[in-house]
Length: 276
Image (cartoon, rainbow, N blue to C red):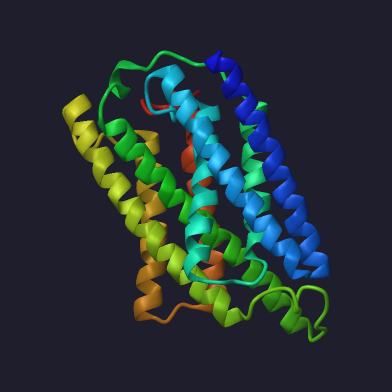
């Protein structure tokens, strides 16, 4: 019975997220405020359904559902959704929701394309550190995904301005300054969470394998990703890196995030490749 409810919830998540994306896209073209408000409410509904889906998998599996590829991608989509909703409660960025809703839908479609089967928890994962480390890390990725979308928007808007033909995107995207501030806020929040994720992972590794660091491929790429973002923050504070450089680095950093999540698992393996 619970498995059937779980499947129904995931189908509902896909449907509601698709509707939210379509409404955001229509709003992007016609700019009718009613559509934007409706799309945001439906995206909120998607976030709630995603939460219920993750909770239902927890009760079925008996552990935090973040150990398979399907669960990791779903958790990632959930973190992007709620990172955006929490961001929106404090800041308003024109048409940001359109880009975020599309990213969430893409992640959920990827999750739908892989097996949703439940697997026994590997011995090394049977720890209270699993929900702590994994949740913090994926939430970090959620805010870094926001910075990635902001970077894409910045490059599009800058291209419009440099072309000196202010067309379709110019009136629909925020100012370059607003996008740069968005980048800084999301990057800072994501970097703090990423740092906490690495620290909790090291403590867990000490408990599980007797060493804080083993230079496992995923550990190594997590550190590379951390250094990429640390370098961007350092350059922003000391050398005044803003604008296009910051936008490009946000995109590059997010590519490293994606490789750490999936590329390492399928190409390099290692002790962290449980969902392989």
